Image 1 (cartoon, rainbow, N blue to C red):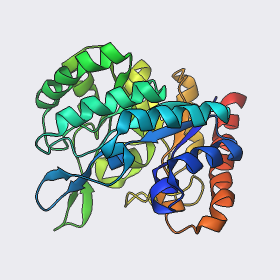
Image 2 (image 1 turned 30 degrees about the vertical axis):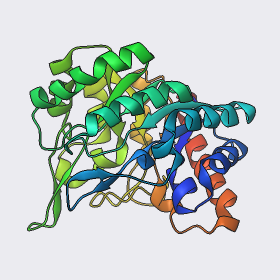
Image 3 (image 1 turned 90 degrees about the horizontal axis):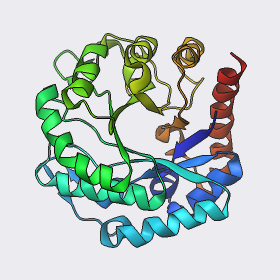
Image 4 (image 1 turned 135 degrees about the horizontal axis):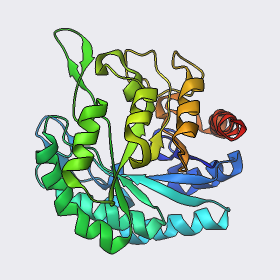
Length: 288
């Protein structure tokens, strides 16, 4: 079982840049890197639009990800997947999602994680995925959509959204009915109380549709995106369920909030801690 991690936190929050992030991820013991494409266009939530950035992923994305791929290969690791910009509900984002799929292919990734529109029906989201599928197939990159959540500010709790339950997730997959749309299970999202499911339930429901993961810990209330084994999620039954269902993808960490406060001089030690947590999960999987 191979391990991977997103690199946005290292590159753009610690501030080391994508090139150095990939080098440190390799040095820490990860087998792969998740190509974070958020800087292709940042969400302007107030005006419901994607805004420009000064980042190379916005200005010259294809040559930049080709460069990142080479850095990864030079350091002995590959890109396993990417994460496209979001939210999918903003006008004009579909061309950006198509470009994200192309960037994934150039980086060498197999999957591009694309959020569903949180508030859309399976059929409405299927219309978006149908538009993206020709690009995905031309690039040889599968679209992996993930289980989402909404927040009720009056009740101050997480509530259901697209793909947040086993039924909703399967309804989305079946509405498209194409092998190029698969599932990325976000472990932390599934474990939040308001989503009224669990990671184990989702794993058994999704079965072979499950081909990618986002792994992180939380207090089962908020979307903490912390390092595994630091909060309240019990990962042992989750790993067991993955083994029972024959999961054969990567164990990909999405624990950016663990890295947000880390100073540049302490970055490698923190990344190594994250790699050790990921390897512990992978070793447990292999031992079952």
